[in-house]
Amino acid sequence: MGRLDKKVAFITGAARGQGRSHALRLAEEGASIIAVDICAPVDTVPYATATDADLAETVKLVEAKDRRIIARKADVRDLASLQKVVDEGVEEFGGIDIVSANAGIFSFAPAWELSEEQWQHMLDVNLTGVWKTCKAVIPSMIKRGKGGSIVLTSSTAGLIAYGNSAHYVAAKHGVTGLMRTLAIELAPHNIRVNSIHPTTVKTDMILNDATYKLFLPGTPNPTEKDAAAAFTGMNALKIPWVDPVDISNALLFLASDEGRYVTGTTQVIDAGGTAPYKFPHA
Image (cartoon, rainbow, N blue to C red; front, side):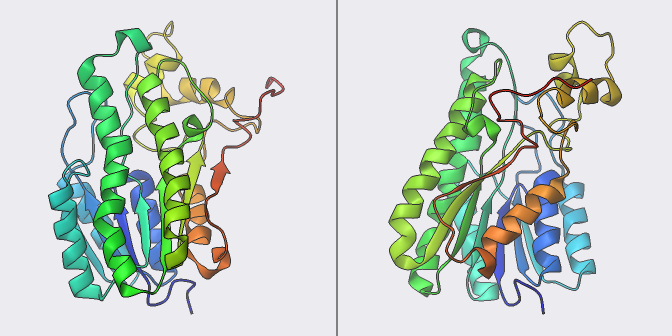
């Protein structure tokens, strides 16, 4: 038996990266999956975003685990499109037990140099998109009356600040506040709400030329190896980043009965990155 047998999970940003990892990890434990991703560029994002082919690969990998999956293109900024997928998933599977509001973007500049579009796109996707995901799913969970687990993807930037990312830090702090409010509001319905706060994760959001240049501005044509050394300094443990499955395992705990009394918490997977003082790595 899996830890999520007969459960249904709704996951945004599921075409690749953490979202795909979440879909696979929950499927391994018995969950059916409703997967959503925009599969299109976002103008102010300085790296390639997920594609139709990425989402199709997620479907293939989940089905290889002998689990059912519905995968649809939808933008978390568009409540109507999210609601359509939620309604289809409820019709197909009978209800939703787990929500992973995972979709997110990253861009960077000093706060006073951010364009209005950079600021607005970040807040629209990383904060308002999380709220719209919850708004689309929560009524059906309440009506069903079987409780559930909602996990919002924040960041270490939802707990502490980083330079060159005021819009990202603001959005992720907002996600933390949204989680705490939803945990109070949904407790009478036995729906638990928590947030997860990763350090840097080895995904396309981090592994790209634009991000390498942000961390190594004086290095011509920096590589992943160059960036790994820079990222290691952010963490107390001597690693540059964690793997997507490390975040998926935290999500699994919060989604399963093992976390049945855990709500309103910030689950940190940061390799010691939020510690106020860290010994420098040799």
